[in-house]
Length: 238
Image 1: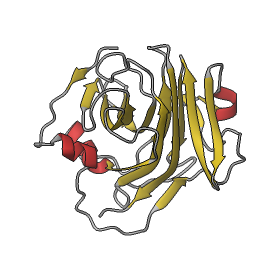
Image 2: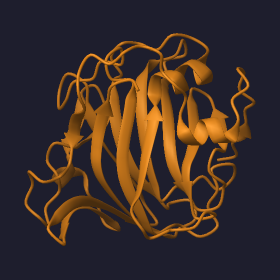
Image 3: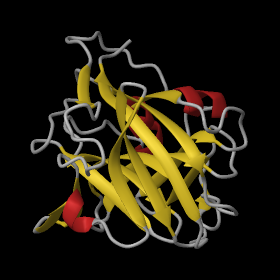
Image 4: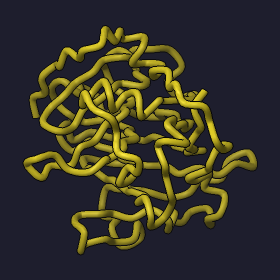
């Protein structure tokens, strides 16, 4: 799918998008762990993550995994994390606010995680052939047309960190990139989701996002993606 570059108001520079904006409210609580993947058996899908196709169609990770896909916990050097692997496929798994976890943006406006890209789909670009080896995105509800309103943070195959691409009610922000050094090494990301929402949608964010989703995507390029994700946390304001 061809994506159009959107110029966002408020004077946000690529560096601002790469690091996340500042949030002004004082924190009222400590960090909250959404998942560190330590509770699961290694080699098995993490069962707190589900495939949501609609409000009435929700499947467990084990039920939803198909050919050319892997979504399983890996143990390495005493640590556990989840691996998303695709071969010409697209996978996504979510945790829902009020179901698998709870999130109040007023007290915890920031989202943090660690990931590493072991393999990214060749020739992919969020502005063209829209495959993304790894993504973490937040869904907030629906727009007036009934489309999910989401911000998607990606590990891009080609675009530089800070690139912002928008189509419809979905905005993509490149958080890490193969164009930068250290692909294959663990990298930490922090985003002020409340600030990003204001810049993307031009309004105050809802108190409770709908869900957090992690995904791997190589269906358009018919390539391969392999990305590890760990330590997904909600953080209070700085």
